[in-house]
Length: 361
Ligand code: ADP
Image 1 (cartoon, rainbow, N blue to C red):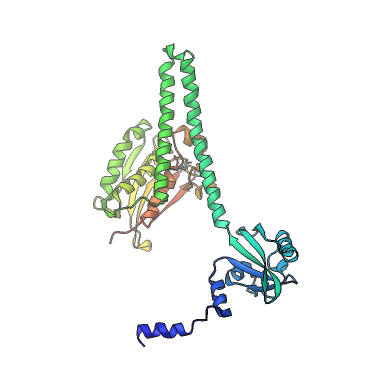
Image 2 (image 1 turned 120 degrees about the vertical axis):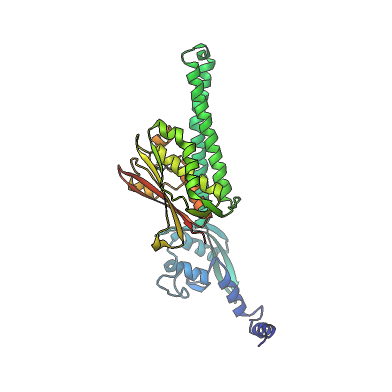
């Protein structure tokens, strides 16, 4: 049968636009759950989405009491009142469970076949509410993070205005505190802009072959003063000929964040070591690891340190000028490469962060 013939013959089997099968198809293709209840408060009809959301152990919903299908008193009352008083209701429904579900439910009386019924349209808002919560948390975190340095700046400007500017012993010190706090705000705003650009998909990566050993040397040169201030040795164990397939600028950004942390959270006199590996059991993956000899990260924090603004040791991170966004940026950049980031940590011995990238062909 030709391609066109097969389309036309398939069309002949389509249900007519006003046939029950047509409406059944439309309802079943609807993403939102629909339940119709009769006078006796039993389900007379439902669509596939409602079945997926509310059927326990695969039972059909039809003929069952609404109160058994969705156990919520408020919902039950709204259906009942819609039936008795011809009223329309919009209610919120929260269903407990392993994953708590939330719905906006539109409840309206309908007349079907001369009988009064009530239709409930269940719009799943679980994900929307989750994203809204994340957005609010993010905003409140940003405000909080900006307020701390801003308060310090305002306090020291006032102190200088109130006479400390004439105090040769302290004026420069106060100015340097102001400078440190403005730098912190500057870092924070840069990191926020960077993260939001990555998350909104505005950053495209350009994959190329990157010589890894040379890149690590370059980053080591940039952090060498910070490292030598704390007598930390920077060790590059990447073989000279190792290359990975990555966006050079973005890989540098990821490694700079990890190496910077490895220096910041190291013990005085410790080491930072970068290694490259293409382990056989993960063939097709290039692994770049950054190891330090710091205090390590307690197990209860390990899962969360890639979240925005999450810090294992809040006071220490602030004191050493962290924004709490570095690892979130690394995670997003690794994923943009089709890769991942993971961490292993050993209390009092140190941590190892591993970037996993799809291997160069
Ligand atoms: P920050 O700007 O605070 O360094 P990051 O997102 O880079 O933010 O890191 C988040 C948190 O993870 C840090 O505040 C710190 O608690 C923890 N962390 C990151 N890297 C290390 C490390 N190498 N050793 C110990 N803790 C680390």
